[in-house]
Image 1 (cartoon, helix red, strand yellow):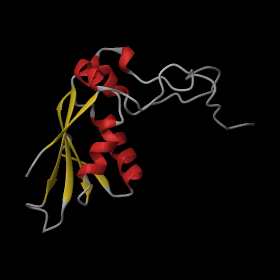
Image 2 (cartoon, helix red, strand yellow):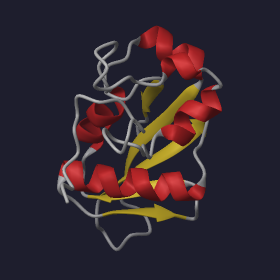
Image 3 (spheres, one colour):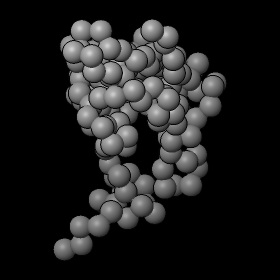
Image 4 (spheres, one colour):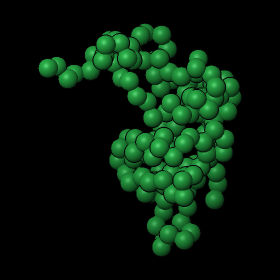
Length: 140
């Protein structure tokens, strides 16, 4: 049995392509299926968005560096100002973000993602690559 994924086929076409996206909750909150990325079908490439997508979707994420109350350790906190995904999607985003940045990531209090280390610029860059996401860099 061939268990490989064929990226040339779209999602759900006879088991080919990718069928699950942890960012689906972000796109559902926007209420606009047009802002969801299209993958292998050749239309809009996944991971590319622009400012108009962010404004239409209404998903805003605040990225800030923190040290207080953490034993002197620096962490990067991501809080959703609008369009926060559900807990399951938030955990999946934390896992992807941690793997992409090569650091520890966890969901804190069911509403924020905490990354180990001062990764504000890298995390903001990763989030800006997601369609429909506006990133706000907070100053501490």
